[in-house]
Structures are given as structure tokens and as C-alpha cells.
Length: 339
Image 1 (cartoon, rainbow, N blue to C red):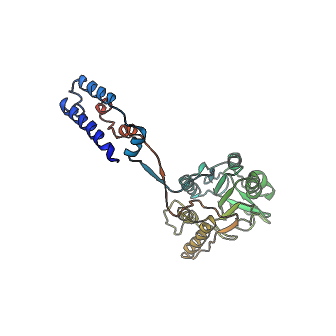
Image 2: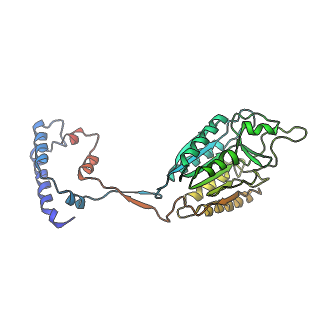
Image 3: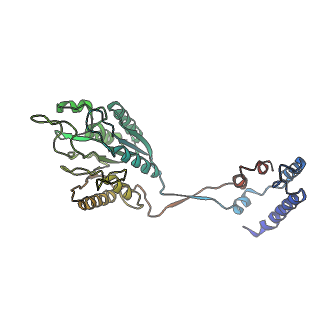
């Protein structure tokens, strides 16, 4: 505080203190104090000469708040998790994984579209909204946990109302095709960057019949990744994604999601480095229980950082002296507000 401000401030607040004492400390004993006491104090404060704005700014400490990272671009995430399948095997962890990912993306500055136990119509509407909102320079993050199958080189994400199909040709009518319905549309939207995470490498949910059934080898096929996109599958071709490392495991999230959120929280890591770290950690953890799970990653994008800086960024916000005084009042003591 500049020395020039000390004399007037000391005089002013000394007079306030004297006035408080002279009226019998009405703030403490408001219920028994005389109304005239408050009026006198109010008139005194009103008549006091206000400080110049420049001096006020110098004499008032500036409160700060710390955030994880500066977010300047338009960030939107679509997070979907399907457990409650009506005609095929239900799942246990998909909704929990989606909720966790939605929370994490919000903490990274994403506006999250969160959809749980979604039917085909709901999935299509959510994808349409997502693509529109990241168009022309936006940053998108897509996460799906649920059943997924590959058929004829195409990858299908299954809604909760999918039927117990026996005809592979029906998939294009009753499911979302990852490459055409999502990836291609994102690629055509003009988005700056997009990260797609598909945790759908589970057992084929469709019944097997004599001859060829619906869905080929376990896992999803290699995507044709557009520019500006990173795609991650929770497990490779022919592998099953673990929901838990032990039968009695109580973690609400699957192995892949646990490791993924651990890595995206780290500042200063480029997305390609994040997903490679996730692949290594998932592979190592699965190997401990003699299971093979190596996430598949496809990168067709320049460097992008979810949290750009290695340290947190402090954003300054300026509050006036009056705002600071109002904020310091005790809401349980109306007498302070009257003064």
C-alpha cells in the first residue's frame, strides 16, 4: 500500500471505530441498539470522501483463482454409456465409465453432452448435435462405452434397443456405424481436432446360429481415420476389454477408463503421448492377471494438448473494495447488512 494512503485511511477507520464505541457497539448488540445509532453511522460512511479509483486499485488486494489450464478454443464432448440393453446381454460398467469420463471432460473445459442408456434415435440425435457444435474450428471429444461389433470391415456401436439380430444386413439399420455416421461427419465438419475413445471391445452380444452369425472377430476393425483425429479402442482385435482385474473388484470403472483418466489429468502431455501411456499401463495391468489387452490407437493429427502447460495458470480477477466488504459480511447477522 502506498504511504500516501496511510494517513487518510487511518483517520477514516479510526473515526469509524470511535463511532462504534460511542454508540455502544450496535453491530454486536443490534437487537437492543437504538435505530438512530445505525442511521448516524450510515450517514457518516456516506459522507466520507471516496478514494480515487487508481488509489483504490493499489490499496485493494487482488483475489486470484487457479484453474487447471487455459481453455480458449470451443470444446465439446459427447459421452455415451449403455448398460441397459433390452434384447442382448446387459453390461455393468459402461454407464459408470461414461459418468466418470463426462466429469473429467468438464474439468478440462469441455461442454459435455452426456447420454446414458440411449436408444438408436437418441444416439443419432446426440451425434448430430455434437458434430454441429464442433464444426468450423471446434475441438471435439467422443467417448462411447457399451456393446460394439465389426461386420464386413465396418464398426457398429449398439444402442440399448438393438434387437437380437441374426442377419448382418440389419446392423446398418439398427446401429450407429462408427466410420460413416461419426468419423466421416466429424472429418467433414471442419473441426480443429477430435479425440474418439471407443470402449466397446467386449464379447459379441448376438446369438450364434448355425452358419455365420452377426459380428465377426471380437474387437473392432481398423478405422479410416480422417485428418485432425485421434482414435483409441480400449482393446485390440481379438481381445476383450476388462471391466475389473479381479472377480471381487469394486472399482466402478473398467480397466481402460481408470488408466485413461489417470493420464489425461497430467498437464503438459500431448494427446499422442497420453494415449501411448494409457496403452502401456493397460497392457501392464492386464498382464498381471494373465490377460491380454492392448488398446489400439490411430493418430492422424498434429500435436494437441488437453492441458497445455506443465503448471497451473493463475487468472487475475479484480474486485472493488465495496464488493470485498459485502463479501465479508456474516449472513446470519442482519445487523451487519444494516450498517
